[in-house]
Amino acid sequence: MMEAEMDHHIGYEKSERSDSDDARNGYKEKTINSSYGSMRIEVPQDRRSTFDPKVVKKRQKDISDIDQKIISMYAKGMTTRQISETMQDIYGFETSEGFISDVTDKILPQIEDWQNRPLSEVYPVLYIDAIHYSVRDNGIIRKLAAYVILGINLEGRKEVLTIEVGENESAKYWLAVLNSLKNRGVKDILIICADGLTGIREAITTAYSETEYQRCIVH
Image (cartoon, rainbow, N blue to C red; front, side, top):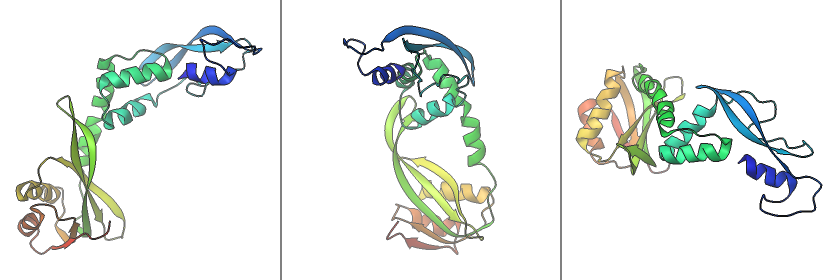
């Protein structure tokens, strides 16, 4: 990407000829710090020394936010190989597939803590909606539904209670989801609003017998 920035800066690509008074002038090695230690990258130079890359700025010595970029790409369904190649294109240094896996594995305990955190005892309204994503499952990219369960608490604030990824909607599946909320402290829900999910009515009757079910008309 820094090569593309250089093309834009001097006005022509590496393979082209130009009458411009500026031109490429090799590369300069630069040591930068990241969440995983220091590394050396090659930054393109121009003869007039006016090139100021945006990806890694001239005086920038730290790219600790790199792991967030990797996690974002992983969440969008990119393979470790694709992420590695993208990091090479952007920053100009190699990142092994093992390194990418280490970064993505780093966030898993945080996700688990969030999924198991205690919840409020009462939610007047609970919404269940599906977002379809490309997700990684045992190394295979597949289209699955991520069910976002959003609660409105007694203060009127919205709170994402959990996000569940599922293949098959059924009463058994939804009962497991609702029982999980129970185990995290949710004792009462006044209304559950969902978009005709298979088995949701039966699950609500079993887990929260006093809760009313309302089908969503407009999201």
